[in-house]
Structure formats: structure tokens, C-alpha cells
Image (cartoon, rainbow over all chains, first blue to last red; front, top):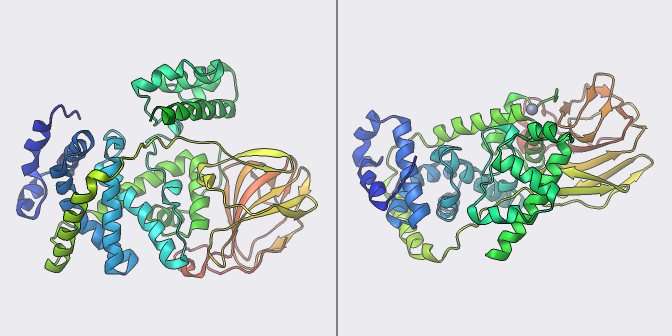
Length: 214
Length: 222
Ligand SMILES: [Zn+2]
């Protein structure tokens, strides 16, 4: 789905699943609901649109609050979960990829990960955050493509060519020719482990380029 | 080809975020090796998200008031929040034991390893998961090493991370995840050497939910 202007996304606002429009929702499919939510996501991602964020908040906050009550057993913590989750929806909105997951699944993932860390605090008095390491937010749909869900931006592309030749070969093969790691291993006659390690090294270099650019 | 997978209940608890850290690490690592369980976990997560977000009823007035306050607070601060740069690239996570370096699954990126300790061919490094009775560690067995036949007082989870080992029942490959209960008796041995992640003595509060991990386990004696 492509959103080309704020106008398009704002026209969609009035269909949103709100209490007043629950009847509309009933006739809409989950798919429509998800598309609606994805429109808001894209307005938040592209324009930091607070009105769209408020819509997402209206949709998700009571549900996250209920989930938090169930898991965390405390009103205060449930509200913290709402805040932590929706703060991340705002700060990560530009990373959401509608082709990979429904908005609801993506938000659920963020919520579950936050909840995991909060439970550790409650149960073990540990202030750590493992949730996002255990369930990485941007899992691809296909296990074969583990490492491939990292999108190469135009600014990164020029750095790819600056990589050492063996790493460049692998990074290009995976991201530009869209080969699987297995296919690439066969094509280059190298073990898949070597593909993985070259890819990691290459991506780490790209990451450091990115960090320098920021 | 991975032959030993977590059972369905364990996978479900994992997708729900209901397993303790020590076991969540095992599942996450297995999933990094296993496309089949990765897909199942994604499907479970999708189903759970539908379930969690399906109730469209309005919250009680009091709750709604709290949420309204929260929204207005958030909206006034939100412009100051730095956006996530988001490139959560895979980084290489490695561990070195007896001068050998092994790549570890991403879930081990926050290394919490204590020092390696061991006698002879068997070395162990504890992971501080802060879970009291759950003892999570990396276990390394040197080439041609063997662990004498033993039983487990309770339950032991083993995930093979590198190398191979075999016992009376089977040969195991990286990614294989086994849960051994008190009745199981075995004497694993390895030709090439192997690196495993093990959890013994799962925390009591989770034992109810796990069909296989019914008994809190005592110390595993190697
Ligand atoms: Zn599996």
C-alpha cells in the first residue's frame, strides 16, 4: 500500500474503529481495519502526524491496558505498558513494514517484548531489557531470509561498493540480487556459514558507516 | 536438518512471552536455527495479536480518563523523543572456549557469561539470568569427551549450539533442542566436541504451565 500525501491518509480518518463507528467496523473486514491502521502508521512515520497517532492510541490503548491488567496485575503497571508500547509505536513507526506484518501483529510484538521486561522487573527485580533480543522486531516472513529484512537505503548503496570484495559480493547477492543464503553459497561454492559470516562483517561495516553519517 | 524441536505448548508459551528468560533464550536460539519453528512462532504471534486486540468494547469511564490523561501527556512530550534509528543489524556474537571461537545466536548478544569452569573435557560457564533456581549455562565438551551415564533429578533442557554429540537414543546436530526428564537416563559423548546451552532447575512458578517441565529439578550431576 502506498500513501502519497497527507490528504489521502487523513481522508481515511473517519472510518476508524472507534466506539462511535463500531457499526462500520462490523461490516468491515479485518483487512480493512488493518489497512486503516496502516494508513495511520504511515502518517505517523512520514509526517510525525499527531492526529494519526491519537487514532492509533484510541484503538490500541484500551486493549494494551486490558492486556497489562491481566499480565502485570497492577493498574499503574498496565498504564506504564500502554505508555512504553505506544511510545515505541511513535519512535519506530518509520521502521514498520506493512508487507511484513499487520499493524496489530507489529504492535503486539512491541507490547509483548515490553511486558516481558516489565515482568522481570516485578518478579526478579531486574532492570534489564531482553525482550527485543528474544523476539527481534523485524523478523522476516521467511526463515531462509533471516538476515535479509534490512532494507538498503539509497545512501547506503554507495557504501556497499566500498566494502572489501568478498563482503561486497555477499551483501550484493543477498540484498540486490535477492538470492537466499543457500543459493548464494551454491553459486559461490562456499559453505553457508561463510556466507553468513561475510554478510555479518559486511553489515557491521555498513552499520558503522551509518553511525558516522548520523 | 533439525530433528528435535520444542513441543507445541512450549512454543505457545514462548510466543506469549510467558517463559522465564532462561527458557526464552533457548527457544529464541532454536528458532534462529529452525525455519519450521520460526514460522510456527510467527503464526502463533499473529493469532495472539488477533486475540489480544479483538475486544473493541469501551473501557470503564475511570480507565478512559486515565488513558486520556496519558495521551495528552504523551502528545506534549512526543516531539522531544528521538526517533529510533532502527537498524538493528545482526551483529556477530561469539564465545571463545579452550581457544576455539564459536558463533552464537543473536539472543546471546548481551553476554552475561561468568568464567568458564571445569575439569577435564567438560567446561561450563553460567549465565546470570537472575532467576534463582534456574541454572542456565553454556556447556562445552572437548573432542572425544563423554559424560558418564546419569539421570536428572528433575528436568534438563539442552540446546546444541555447535558440533555434535550422541547418546543411546540419537545423534544430535546444531539447533536440536532436547528436554530430558527424571526418567531419562543417558550418556552423551562427542567426537568433534560440542557447545550446548543448558537449563536445569526451571523456576517453580512456570512449572505448572509446562507439561514436560513438571518437576523442579535439583542439581544436575555431571
Ligand atoms: Zn524447531
